[in-house]
Length: 309
Image 1 (tube, rainbow, N blue to C red):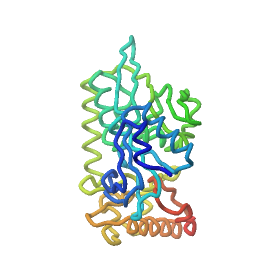
Image 2 (spheres, rainbow, N blue to C red; image 1 turned 180 degrees about the vertical axis):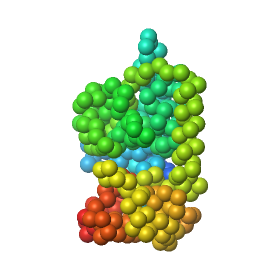
Image 3 (cartoon, rainbow, N blue to C red; image 1 turned 180 degrees about the horizontal axis):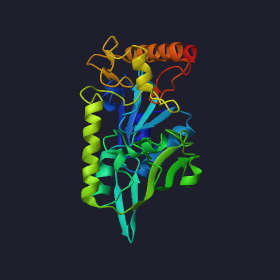
Image 4 (cartoon, helix red, strand yellow; image 1 turned 90 degrees about the vertical axis):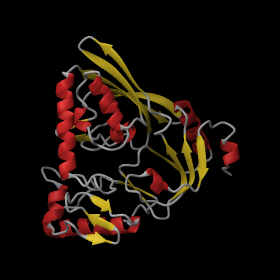
């Protein structure tokens, strides 16, 4: 039997029971988790992962919850949040470039800022993408022709209850995906090129302005709901299917960008699921294309969209 008392004998971080996950997702949606934990450091993380695996207890690891939709019923298991305990960025300057080490809980905004302040390029296109480094690596986040894996050297993960360091080539990076989905990303190292700091600041400012103009930053959301099909844009397909601005309950397919679903203040996960299903069905019927989810689901049945596939 899992208990807070037993966990407290070896775990140094924060533990809570029944914590509402809407407080830890950018959607501001989600019911309670049986256990909620914030490891103090990576050794703390390893100990709690080993404990749950030994006891065959379900758990998931999250960061900023920015690409996540949690069920209204929550999650029957443990949620481990890395944001507060694994948030270190270290720069080792070298001739012609620099080695950057960052832990999985570091917010992408902080990671980009630290690199730019040291005159290091290659990650500036990530400016404005919400979330943490770990999730960005697992999904190989990118924008404007660049991906986070472009200048990545190694990824430290937990696999088989132990720390393992993989070279970039061993991670299986592809468009918005990797082979790390069953692992826990702990940290990563990058080799970044030196660039003019003022130019990097200009590019970041331009990208942030562009995002603010084209994305619904004024309402809680989880970023892009669907992956872009090859040589197409999911948002354009959804818009051409006539669904831009469509509302169900407190959720809306954004009238600014149709590949975003926003929480207008009272949205439930069931509202978002209904809009996802509506968009997939409409695009499939009109264009013969089945949109693939980019947002991650937690606490839902595995076959929730089987009828739309």
